[in-house]
Image (cartoon, rainbow, N blue to C red; front, side, top):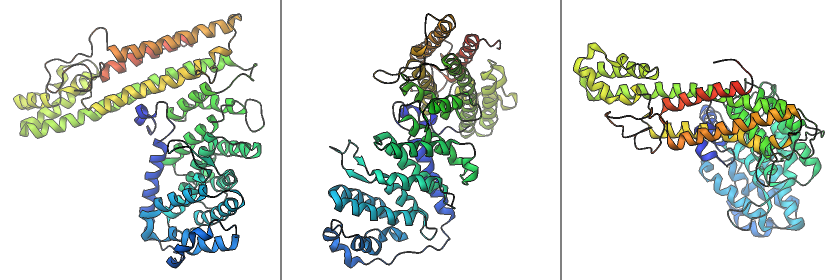
Length: 499
């Protein structure tokens, strides 16, 4: 399972998608490494032009500016030995752009985008240059923010260039397309005033989300999910149910994602959250009953998925515990460590004797001491346990947002239902019960199991419930059992007779 978003859930709650950018950057560097043997063309840089910047960039002379850009200012980006300096060049460019105004700024930005577009699209430029070129197009502003924490006003005429790069039918590397997509998301989040540009961006996001996009444009599977997540975030920025042709195109698309079990839970939850942010005032007639059931079904599916994720984390932690036992107990500890590993698996099903590796003798007991956390169904790694809890809270929070909406924002699905309509009243009751289950989960995480099932006593390295020293009141097995119990309740709410 891909966990780019949920692995960083605690940091992502209330924030935009950062993990996708990190993953894409990693893939970029891998690509750069693979292509390092290629020969790339570097521009001839005339350092003697450095002193002409002040008199050139604001001259409003297209020919003079282009000559300056291609012989010095942007030409430096194409030199591989300058790779470590590109971030400084980008910062300089962004600062110089907002220092200008009027016709001089228009001319400068037009020529800058033209040159950067040629770099991004050229196979003769090394990958880091191409990637930074397209990123820079998306971060160009016409006005700076009031302070460093306030975003500026994006250069709107960069939008069609970014859209063209992202969806080009030419042989454009996926990391370059991704850089263009990041720029479009930034424009969408900061606001696009021009109707034509806004519809064009919506169309681009929809194209990225089309199931054939990855195949048609040779997008590597390991980063296509990042494309999808950013496209959803971009569409969500408009907070509108409308598609490019009006109606409920975007709302329909998000609902389809929520119901699609073939896409990641990251994407399904982002889509649910986006519906919660959406202004649904203009959508009076819609199958809100069906959408509500889809959201509760997502909660059920999420419980199943997270239970499996916890199992995988338990196994991984047991292997680490066994390895620790091998180091502490010599040959006997090795046997015991493996016994502890076996016991860990037994602990997951409630069995304790499975951990008693008779071949290990006393050494086995030593190994048990080293790996006991796995036996009790507890993950000793604090970060792993915190991640599990954050994933659960983030997933349920996204679905809750779709149901309730947000203050001074989207109305949520529940508010669109009529309590005077018998069928819709039943749906409202279902959603209310779902919200209560979410509240119960938050209380469970805060207080721990009522029966003390998470208590770990007398075991090496454990002090209380949950991971050692983590301060959490739940351990992995109690969290898993809680989710499986919730799965049953969500099944009851949607009328599914299944354990």
